[in-house]
Length: 237
Image (cartoon, rainbow, N blue to C red):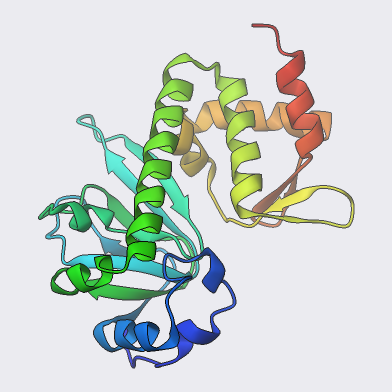
């Protein structure tokens, strides 16, 4: 849903320093917001599908979004879960005419949308182009790591590494020393992140819970990062 463009939001954004627009001045931000639209999607709504025409770039202001692809057999592989200041649709920057993955809102979301025809104006700012390039390199690195884990890591180890990664990217500390992974993910979705079946995720999660390293918090998980890292070090090659 397109909403009224609240001019000035970028200037007072609490996470502006983490955004690709961090180094823009007030006048440049005003120009950006004149060109942009603000869009909202409710929880579990598809934003765009793999193969849809790539109309532009999204910058996530509030909420969580997952990106995934489907294999030939229909199985889904989640590529990334994005939080605040995350980018969707970067393929439009490379001139691609179709979106390369499917984007689905995991929570209620609010995003800044820049149409394809406005992207050249965005890229003329060196600081924005540099930060976009860094994001693309980071996405490539994460994809390479995911491929290695999926093909060579053992199931239990893959799940532990996933929980540590999610805790680092989407976690917040709790009073008992644990970290709450601030995402509501099903066991199927956890499996889609590391190439495991729901049954395998259920089995290894049960073992981690029995050790006290993972504990449910409603629909979310609280983890003990120190214990999970030590379990990886203690695991024989």
